[in-house]
Each structure stands twice: as C-alpha cells, then as structure tokens.
Length: 129
Image 1: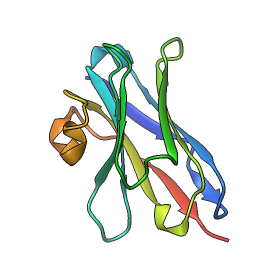
Image 2: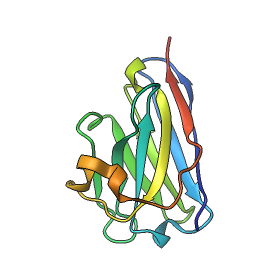
Image 3: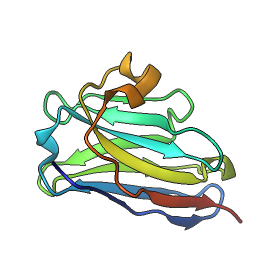
C-alpha cells in the first residue's frame, strides 16, 4: 500500500501563495484519483480538489476554494501538487492528500467517502501577518 507524504506547507502572509506536494511510495497511477483535503483547528476535514490521474486528468474543486487553488500532476516525478493563491487567515489548516477511488463533480460533495488507503501526516499551512 502506497505511503502518502505531503510537503510544502509553511507560514505565509495574507495574499501569498504556496505550492503543496503529494507523493507516494508507489505510482500515482496505482489509484484512480488523488484528492487534497484540509482540516482547520476544531473543524472537520474537508475535500478541496481531486484529479483523475489514471484516466483523463480531469480536475474538480470545492466551491469554497474554486479560483484560488489549482491541482496538477507531474507524471514523471509521481507527484500531485496543490497550488494555493490569495491565501487568507481562514485557509490556515493542516493539508492532506489521499488516494481516491472516484473523482468527479458529484464526488466533491463528500470527497471523504472516496478515500482509499491511509492518510499521511499532512502539512501545516499558516496564513498570518
């Protein structure tokens, strides 16, 4: 089973940008899709975006972050990225990626249902001046 590792988090000022990276011990194409999630302190984990890595590369986004995040994959390096822009203090959270069994606009309604395998430790993003 692939081991998921997230990286790229850190402290950023409001309005700034970050690129998070998700990698696994296996190949991203071992799974149908990869998703990014975040969990703010005291709140439940929520899906942000997913990408169909095995099929057509289609991407989907939660309405709450649409226009400010971009998910992409680099097949050569076996990584999936999440670019965050125009960051706000409300974006402060631990960000996780996970393998998914399904990725679509419908799946985005509750992306947690489609997670397969284990979670990584996440990467902390803190937006503060």
